[in-house]
Length: 260
Image (cartoon, rainbow, N blue to C red; front, side, top):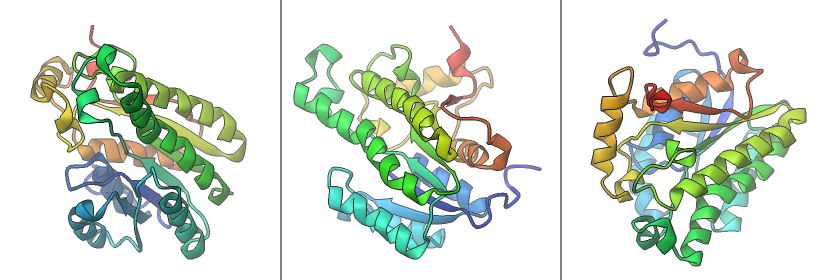
């Protein structure tokens, strides 16, 4: 069966998708994939500016829960999970697709990064996932799946990825430790590591077009992945077919990560 016509294997599952900015977002690919396999969606947006891009997408996907979420505001984070508790009573899937660093710290080398900028990047891009997991776990009384978006630069040096490399490395480590702590509750946790994608977040990286071209040339499959490739990978991992997988970092990059 082709991915264009997937089975509704997750019919009735409840999925929270965070970090959607527009139709090019990885989060949007995840939302579409989960919707296509039958899941019901809760979708968040970061601020009023982002809402204008995300709301039409949420409406098209028939998401019954649509709320603001700036992860630096505890009240907004708690409000999202309280809305899910009140409307659904449970949660099966959480996708964390949120990353941010101050531009001056992101575009300079790691040696030049400020303590404040590094701390902000770590809080928003990494620890916010831990905070979400803490709130999600009580709603996953019958088990569930948590996903965080990483990148190859977490494990290998990628020129110009700079301070986000250590931040994503910390995120991957958090996924492993959360998988250990939440495993007894039947909650599985994965870091997803897509190849380079043209998203709004990636546009802040220096020489990003060069990274795209190099990835396409090095990939054994000979082409870049897209947001739906990432989405369907997450959808598979959330199904019973992947029930014994947890704590993995899964590369969705056409095989680029295996190349020397």
